[in-house]
Length: 414
Image (cartoon, rainbow, N blue to C red; front, side):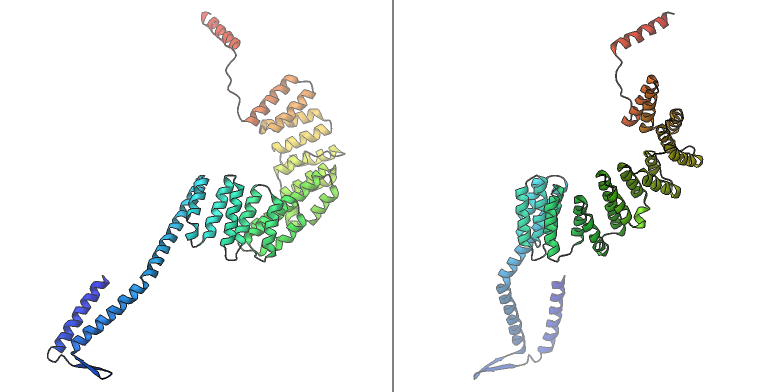
């Protein structure tokens, strides 16, 4: 379209010049070292245009090779982009070997070969080819101009996937010492410190997590809560009540008011045979906020005076008379106080409101101890059905089928 406009403009200009120059074509004289060249103005204009066209052609000829090379390079880059796109699709579809071949076929022609090698490393790792994975990571590291963070983070993630926490920690520490701060590296460090139980370093990492971009406050709060949950569980498993108390005292108020943290503290204390602090924490929580998990945890107490704990639970029962979890807790405390008849009543009431496997299992155990084996068997069967989710659909035994058929025939005859 542009060329047509140029041609039309040239024709118009030419017509105007012809109209002007026909009466008097004009005269141009060029003198060069004593040589004079005379020509009319139209001839001079034609020579100027021809000279311009010749110069343009010469420039194009000189640039032709470079332009050809640039066009070929652009085609190779476009092919590399298409291969990366195709390789990512194949990786997401589970065709890992094909994806690895696709992304590496034109990696050298890509504007960012680093991405190709990282995708190839993940594809090789998913195939279990650790040697090839390391080779691609090495090539990725060689292809980067200076930003090693993507390669090291990918390597750390692969090591973590294979549960090699210490090796991943070493890789991430290289990133830390180089001064290349990265949000993803901080998250991975937090995960490793949590897995290894390095609570002190994890707490030191918290300010950096809060100042990092891309990590929500809710995520950081959840990490902090998990720190204290893991500390409480670890101390409880080690039967070290001093460590349980230290973790509880070190936790901020926003953490110690959470239901899951209070329950974890109570269970850790119970594991250390410290029933009073466990009962106090659960009682304070339930007086402040009603929670079914905390109610069931209160029923796990083994206090020196079970009647005192039972009295507390029965006070709650006046406000929550049809709470099946509270009825189960009262029943458990009754059994510890050797009030078996009362425990049975609470269990039957709880099972009537909402049958649950643990309620029926406790009832079956109590009935068996009371000598009611048939009812205990039925309660245990119901508990098993609830746990499994359905009754097994088994065919009747042959003798039972014959008996049913005979009874049916007798009824027809009568």
